[in-house]
Image (cartoon, rainbow, N blue to C red; front, side, top):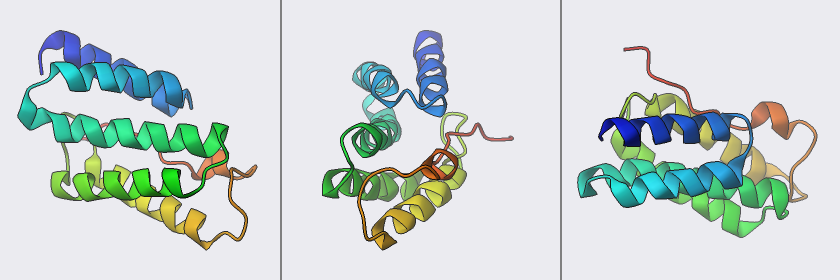
Length: 126
């Protein structure tokens, strides 16, 4: 990734962590379209995660959001423990736990507690 792509990635992560999922998805997509092919799976996982959260919080969730989370987990699993400065292992664990929580619910859609349960993208410590 070049400097501009890293900046855009950081901005997209910031938007995601501030729960601006649609905006972060758009910026992640822009980065995805600009990076080298071998870097695309990492960014694609972030695109799908942002899209899943947008669908969950703004469109009532459902199978579409859950399927996007599952697809993202498959990619993130191959990228653990870290990729491009992101703690992919922590993101994988948080997203997996959140997916399990959503699958166990009887009623779909976001609840008051989701604000604290939703995964965050964290930078790696190394």
